[in-house]
Image 1 (cartoon, rainbow, N blue to C red):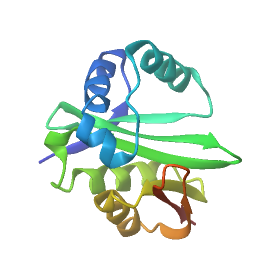
Image 2: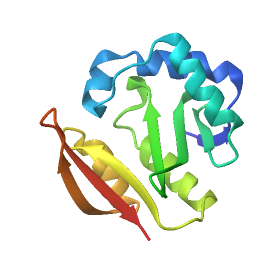
Image 3: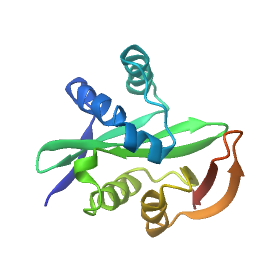
Length: 148
């Protein structure tokens, strides 16, 4: 299985949109899917912003998801999303490792809710450590992780 990262292309966005519309995946990630207009505006900001870095994850030439880094609250945070067909196959781990090798800025941060143990495991295997937890108004525990 060949996993690669490349620049995000406009034709990747419909795949990303479909991934984020997966209700079960969104719930596991603690994410509310965006309507198409909001999704397009979000990605327009990402692709047009100099402070954003986004890479498409490909598996055997197919778009599997993305990995990104973005500024938030005075720090740089990474995020990633893979379509359900690409879960539990080592693809997330490979993609995050490649992204971290490319993006050398440290420290980097990530957030994960406590119901997304697979994502937390990927981050921890990549060298991130839990540096805090916060219970939101919705009762969901969000963990903040740091690398470097």
